[in-house]
Amino acid sequence: MRTYWNTTHGLHTLDQWQPSCWVQVTCPTADDAAFLQQTLGIPDYFLDDIADAEERARYDYDEGWILIILRIPYVKEVKSRTPYTTIPLGIILKGDVCITVCNYETNLMIDFVTYQQKRGVGFTDAVDMVFRLFLSSAVWYLKRLKQINARIEAAKQHLDRKVDNADLIALSRLQDSLTYFATSIRGNETLLSKLKFKLPVDELDADLIEDVSIEMNQAREMTSIYSNILESTMSTYANIINNNMSTVMKTLTIVTLFLMLPTLVASFFGMNLVNGLENRVWGFPFAIIISVLLTIIFWWYSRRKSWI
View 1 (tube, rainbow, N blue to C red):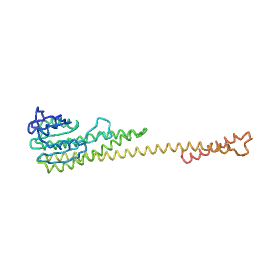
View 2 (cartoon, rainbow, N blue to C red; view 1 turned 180 degrees about the vertical axis):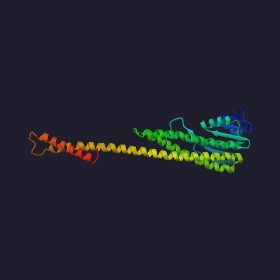
View 3 (cartoon, rainbow, N blue to C red; view 1 turned 90 degrees about the horizontal axis):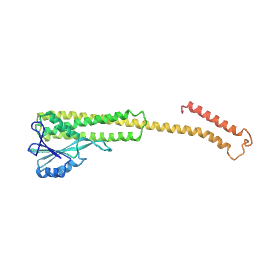
View 4 (cartoon, rainbow, N blue to C red; view 1 turned 30 degrees about the vertical axis):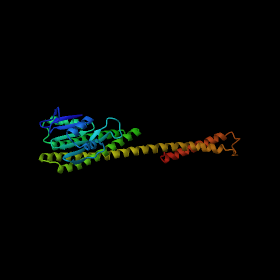
């Protein structure tokens, strides 16, 4: 699906492409790809690079065409090992052509359009739009990080109850998400530092770049903090599991020892050997008394050693 936006005075949709308009392509179809390649003339491999979910944040230049790939946060609607991940957003520039291509429907782009419409001033040029997309991505990284932190805090509140595999798996998935976030934010920061020298930046763009740098730096630091918190939480989970396991094994060992003493006495007196008690009326009660006395002695010793 593609949408044409007039960015001169506010943000308004157009019925067809016009020079200097913004072409927003979301989940491109074969018709969209044909329009971009045949009508606008963009290199065909640009779309292939953007479609690669693992494509890193980078800048490319080919015969006047500029390709900027920005990594943006994305939340998967279906259950996955990484509920929070990052995806590539492609920005293609040349002269009066300005195109953004994303192979996923994202809240970031919907919010970006809505916010720019509320601003009502549009973009000064394509470079201004590029850096505002960088700023929007940094803001959304912060939003997603707060959601991840809320999940971590909810997990920490459950530490006093029974810990099961589902809790550990959920935290492991969040750890994977934070790893993707950290890698993508660092890549975006590196890309931003390069674009300052690759694109024609004016004074207003320089101020915007400074704001983007501040937001990205905050997102990177928050990712590091939450990653450390999550690692500490998972370590606490592991310690609790080990402690619970030790308690169970200790209990089973004590119970086994308690059962072993009467069994040992019964084994001695049950052997097919002459022990002098075979024909005594008090032989069986004597064996019972010895078993009880040994059990009481062991119980007293265990209490003294704080085993029970």
